[in-house]
Length: 401
Image (cartoon, rainbow, N blue to C red; front, side):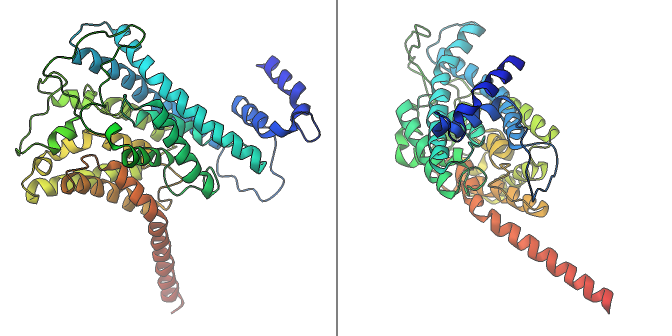
């Protein structure tokens, strides 16, 4: 690392003002800060809370996403070989999923970081680390069969219109990754819903050749429940066999790449909470809100399969767990007051279940719930702060009297 540090110090004058490559100064600083902790210090007006910086926060979140991403790659291969009814070993299964998912990660980062580099150069500002997380989240919340060109368009749209126009990292109102998914859902609905997008049945570099059996179904569990006329629907896998609750928890079901495994997401949640990056108040409140609303619908909901689905299944299916752990806890777009975090998380959980039950055309619900509450997060914080001010004023009046 010392040799790399010396090399960067040697070429750095070329990127500074007056150097022949000064037009790419922000690009150089971006790579330098990614590789090494900056040794520059603020000249005035600093307020130090702790030793962690945005790069460390983003790096920890990316590490926390790894279990869900790796399992998602395996599940892509697992669903593929299950659908075509071929036996495959662990490495063949994982290799198929890896080759299917990797291009989406590359496209997400190339497009997103490319735009951020261009904007930083244009504004003559430093390149922020915010897209390190968004670039990983975007491929994990889309179906495996989402075309790369569509993913590129959606990523560009979200980075430009949900982030840069608001001022860049830390200034966005909406979660960038969820805006990408929302754009995809409304602009290209056939590529984000239905039975044909969740399981890749094609061949990748010669892997997984075979024919899809007659009983093949690519619908997600929530998709199956939403169209079921019975009050106790049977959720089946790709070949029509009943899926157990363990399959739902472990993640051996069709769904977005990184959202299926509750266990993998739980590992990520432990990392985020142990490092203090995410708020347990927001995270737990989402699950409480979802459980309460699911139970309410179980008792007094409409006579539909989605309303009568056990409340605990709501928490483990779809993007509920993933959204609660990695999306709702986004420190930029969520509530920031301690009391506000409880309210913000609880309302997300409630709204996600309400959308699932009351809107059969959109059985997921988590994406819209988080985006909707992103809008109200500042309002929640405002009322919490005003409530604290009024309470202290009353206490002060009592003391003076």
